[in-house]
Picture: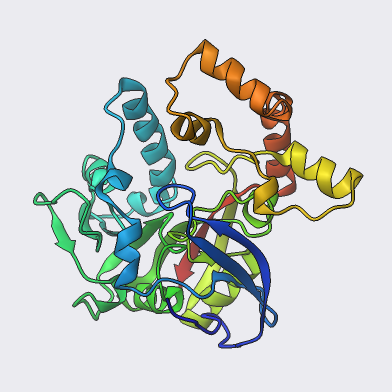
Length: 321
C-alpha cells in the first residue's frame, strides 16, 4: 500500500469521504476514498501499488457470460461507443484508433468492421491473448509511440483504474493528431451512486472524477472539452439502495456508512450459496424489504438523474488543439 498526493493538482490536503471493502473478491479488505480539498478529485488513499493491484484482477474478472443476451448487449454497447467516433469517419482514407484498456479486444474488432485500423493497449495478465492486431502490454503512458499517429484514442471505463491519470492523458495528447479525439468514460463522483451509495468498484477504481476535474485535466494537457454525455447507454451505475440512503440521511438525520448498505441480490446469493429463482427472490425481499420498492423506482430515479446530469456515468470527448 502507498500514500499519494492529488494526481491533478499535487495537493496533499484531502478529506475522507467514505470507507468500503472490495465487494467483489476480498470483502474483509477495506479502503478509504478521499477528496482533494483544493480541486475536488476523488481517489483511494492509501492504495495498492502497481505491483500489488494485479491481485484484485483475477482471471474471472475478465470472463463474460457466454449468453446470447450478453452478445446483444455488447453490440449495443459498442455501437454507442462507436457513435462518438462517427464524425471522424466522413473524411478520406481509413482512420486509426488506439483503444486503451482494450481487455479481450472486442471493441477494436468491432471498429475494424467499420473500416478502422486499430491497435490496443492492455496490461492485465489475466486478459485473453490478442494476436489479430497490434497490442501494447505496457502502461499506456509507456508505449513506444511518440508522435501523433492516431485519429482517436478511446478509454472506456479505464481512467478510474489507472495509477496516474495525468500521465495517461498527457500521452493521449502526444499520440493523437491535431483535431483528433480522446474519448473516455468514467464514473461521475457528483452522483449519489458514486459518492454516497458505495457503488464504486474499489480498489480497482482508484480515481473518481467530476466534470470540473475532467475539464482541468484536459485543459492542462492540450485538449478542449468538446462534449460530455451523462447517462447509461454504454455502462450503468444504478443508484442501489438510494431509498435506504434517503430515509437514513434525510428522515432520520443519520450518517450513511457501508455497514448500513444491504447486500446486493448477487452478493446475497453468493454469501448464502443460493441459486437464482423465485424462492431466493422471496428470501432476498424478506432480507431487505425496502429494496423491492427501491428497484421498482430505479427507472424513474435514473431518468431524473440523467435529466439533471447527475447520473453515475459520463462520457467525455476531448479534441486535440
